[in-house]
Length: 294
Picture 1 (cartoon, one colour):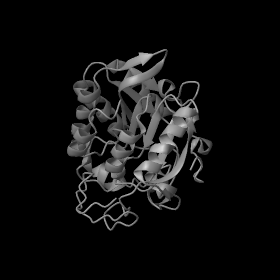
Picture 2 (tube, one colour; picture 1 turned 180 degrees about the vertical axis):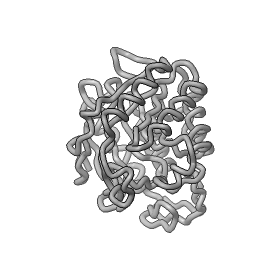
Picture 3 (cartoon, rainbow, N blue to C red; picture 1 turned 90 degrees about the horizontal axis):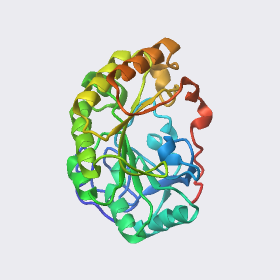
């Protein structure tokens, strides 16, 4: 595959992306690069279920958060196997055959176009999850309309100064807000079958150390703007990863007080969804990347 002038993500860098080489922001070629494809049991209960989610972790990223738990593949791009869209479709079908409740596209933004081709080839009978950082192009999302059953975006920040410091994205807030509303429009209210999500949008927010005001402002926006039937997942799994040591204020886990402050505020808003315990902040929940399933 070849992309002459890439505009898939909000960076809009216009890069030339050959099959295995790219000179744009994400530094990735046009063909998808995958670091792991395996059953995954650490998502929200309605995503993982009993059988696991068929998680496909893509190498590279258009967001580049300094604290990313998958820093090894998202920013360092240290692990990954380049696949054609046909080979990627075979990976999807293999996970479906293993009993996965869904195909979970983890960090798919910069490979949206080849992923769309792979989904067209795979003709899956299970839902497809678009698991992303929320920093998405509306034009790309509209191309995906009808191919994605479940959107699982982050809403990381409520102010662009924080977004610029930790993710290098000065336009994150307005971009993610517009993207999340488009995702919710596409999927409509959540639809469950025997406790497993079949269609809908779940918006995640990760509490960052020293940033409870940011978390509260994010929750306020979600309460005021999300359509009925969209779920919210409050995450407490933060551990220092990536380049966190370069940012002393986030080079620690969140405290009990920080967690309880944000959790209590969430409950006052009466948002439907999930709350993750502080005990989830462990390194053993970070998957290994050794080309499993490829």
